[in-house]
Length: 421
Image 1: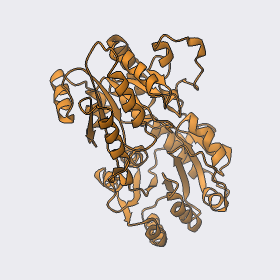
Image 2: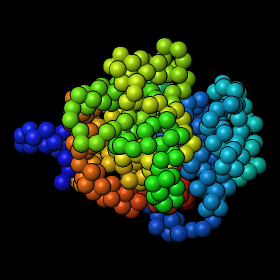
Image 3: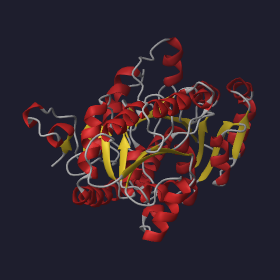
Image 4: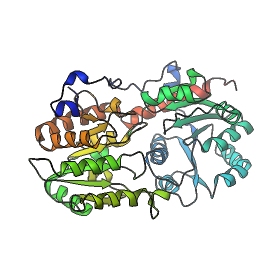
């Protein structure tokens, strides 16, 4: 049974509403040439990600390119100079063209095209709307290329002016990363409905396979600057507007005045970037809120961690209060680590936190979040049940192998058919 804050507070459950489908995701391509899926030929693929940020969107291309290389494909990339994305690609051994700006990339289109032909690249995969200027131009110059676009943001504003009609006319398939964003994509993009497909993310579960010993758990907690004992409540992910940090902090302020059976501590695992990290930016505002509410001894900012799996394995509860999450990779990572998850009842999160896998609370209601968190702090058996069932479900449905099988099948299908533009 899925629990929400009303049931935890003993309120009338009849006022609950159904918050979207919670059935198992299916990554099987539809209307696709099944023979194409079984071919083992090496594909030439180039991922574009022109971004200076470092969040779920930016982490996806290096991860998937690394996995594609592991399968033996010929994988290349384009990224901004001095960006974390560039470092991510190169750390994973992906040959990457770098440019100082989008304009320099556009001006270098001819040289990029020469590189594409020299390395026998047939597939272009754009990951940001800003990538589409360059990607569409390359396809305009070389119509034999097949262009894919993943909407990682869950766009809602229609993109149907003359520029977007031209750019997206070059797209072979547009990937929606959840059921919630699939509907938005159909309405927002000038792409035929049969070329918009849903494709959930996948992730590598290897780092989550072995639970931490009690000693290791304490060591990781010490490295994050949090208490070695008690219930640890995490908010993983980038510090940026829309991720719900204000709601989480205010919920913990309310929890401070509620009765709990165990001591607890909150930890933000992740950091801000760009304007959000500058003086007076989003991170400063959240830290100021912590001080105003007197939570300096109850909330720790652990910063960016390259060992997120180990950090989550040392936590007990993971909160995902984003008000409009397009997918929610942090949800799956938290499930893989065995955390009990509380998620916002908006965006794609209800698709993941459903049935007996966690709890949902209104995205912008700190009081409701406090109820859920108090309930889980006081119910260690329930935390363990959520952790066990969600861990198994995540590993059955969100492996990188499953994601790649579907992704590569679409790549092959695109190469095996004529595209009318």
